[in-house]
Structures are given as structure tokens and as C-alpha cells.
Amino acid sequence: MESNEIQRALMAILFAAGEPVEAKRLAAALELDEDEIHQELQALMDMLSYERSGIRIIRLESAYQMCSSAEMAPYVTKALETRKPPKLSASQLEALTIIAYYQPATKAYVEQLRGVDSSYSISALLTKKLIEECGRLNVPGRPILYRTTPDFLRTFGLSSLEELPEIEKINLQKKPEIPQEGNGESEEKESAP
Image: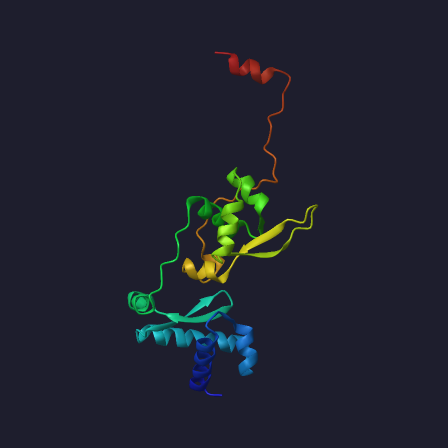
């Protein structure tokens, strides 16, 4: 299969799918190596960008999706009369941040870091499809684990979670060090002038 034919097939599949398609699924459909799929899609992405096409192909971790270019958003919005997505409240943004950086995370973990009940925030994020259930923790009560979705990556313009800005992660498992009481010598030294 020639490069041009591969790219045409990839565009047709991504257009018809309307959602992210895993590279390994594309490789299986075209009977090609996954690395070759990545190379062809990167070439296609570069070409669409260079030609300032109204469509783009974006990479979402190991999946690809066809979408309209950002420059065309006002026209697409006006033509399709789409609404802007609802904004996230501060509590929803806090919960989403915790899940994004510590995923998979339970509601209890989110609440432990935030210090408040997060039921509404978790529910709202599920409704907005920014997070999803990804199993259950193997502890008594079997709490639900949550992770971010491809919609999260698309909403925030990320290709993968590695693009999230660095933060100082908090380890709640580690106990703070408590100073040991000595024989009183250190207290005498501190109080001496």
C-alpha cells in the first residue's frame, strides 16, 4: 500500500469514526505495523497544519481523532449553533485536578485532599465526561476508582497526561517525622544565651 493510499484510508476511518481510534486498531484494519501508522498520521497531521486546512488530526495518547481546526471554531459554532461547554466550578476543578494527577483515585481520596465532601463535584465531572469509572479498589467497601477521559485531554488541549504541568505531589501514606525527645541537653542548649 502506498503512503498516499494509507493516508487517504486513515482520513476516511477517522472521519467516519467521529471519536478517537487507537493506533493498534488502525494498524490491524490496514494490516500495517503500528509504528508505520504513527509515521503516516504524523505526516498527515503536518500536511494539514502546513496547508492551514479546516480540519486537523489530533493525537490523544495512543489514539487519533479528526476534528475542526481551532481557527475555524467561530464559524463551526455559528453554523452548528453549538453552545460553549459549561464552565467548571472551583470545587469541580479541584476534584478534577486531584484525579488527573493522582489517578486512579477514589472519591474518598479526593475528599481527603480537599477536606470537604466531593460527591457533587465527582457527579458533575462524570456527567461532563471529563472522568470515568475505571474499576474498584480492592479494600473493604470496594470504592470506585476514577480516571480522566479522552474528553479531558481534548478539553484541555493535551495529547497525553505527560503534558500536565509539574506539581509537588503530596504523599498521604508517609507519616510526618516527629522529633524525638532527647535527654534534655538540646533544650538546655537552646535556652542558653
